[in-house]
Amino acid sequence: MKYVSLPNDEQHRLCFYLAMEEYVAQTLVDDDDCFFMWQVEPTVIFGRHQVIENEVNIDYCKENGIQFYRRKSGGGCVYADRNNVMLSYITRDDNVEKTFDHYMGVVADALSTILGIDTVKTQNNDLLIGDAKVSGNAIYHLPGRIIAHGTLLYDTVMQNMISAITPSKEKLQKHGVESVRQRITLLKDHTSMSLEEIKSHLRQHVCSSEHCLTLSDVAEIRKIEEEYLKPEFIYGK
Image 1 (cartoon, helix red, strand yellow):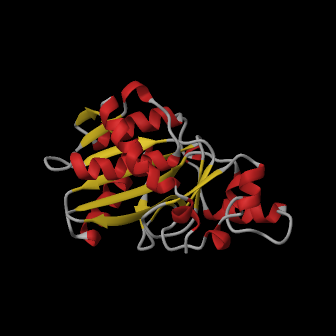
Image 2 (cartoon, one colour):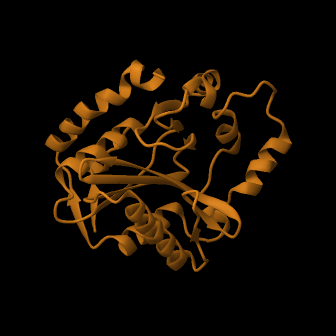
């Protein structure tokens, strides 16, 4: 598997990386599977078939500088920031179930090896440490290509995670934070390694080569990104 990197280690909005997945699927996976990791400023990402008003607290996001974008895969609503990392896996295949199982197994095995703690996959597309969720994942299919992507939770701003997703009629209460905290786990609670160290080990464990995109590639990705920025895509039912 090859690791796909960007020139100058640039940072982009979340929608750019969704477009990058499509571009990689279209241009790079003929000879080998591809994998890359990315981080974003505070952002909510919601599933293709979700109604934004039912899933995203738009007012809270705007008041707190949290961006929000729709993805093309299904699944639920996710909050991300620079305290966690997003994973993208692209392969040339048509068997969604087989590919998803393989991707989840690769990440679970890598985390178990890196942390020395069992990480297991579930039928709900989550990765667990013990009984708590550390990663949620989704997948979608293009002709002859499959894109799988997911979260990897190292740390987070818990209030943003709760308040930015699903509007609440009542003010956030402490017990709400505690409830979510019981269902998820943070990698920082299981290791003394930093997030950058975990990323480095994960890349070494999963990938055997690297492909660095060019500025020309970035320009093409930006063309795909335009679709994700259209109001009718973000807000459309």
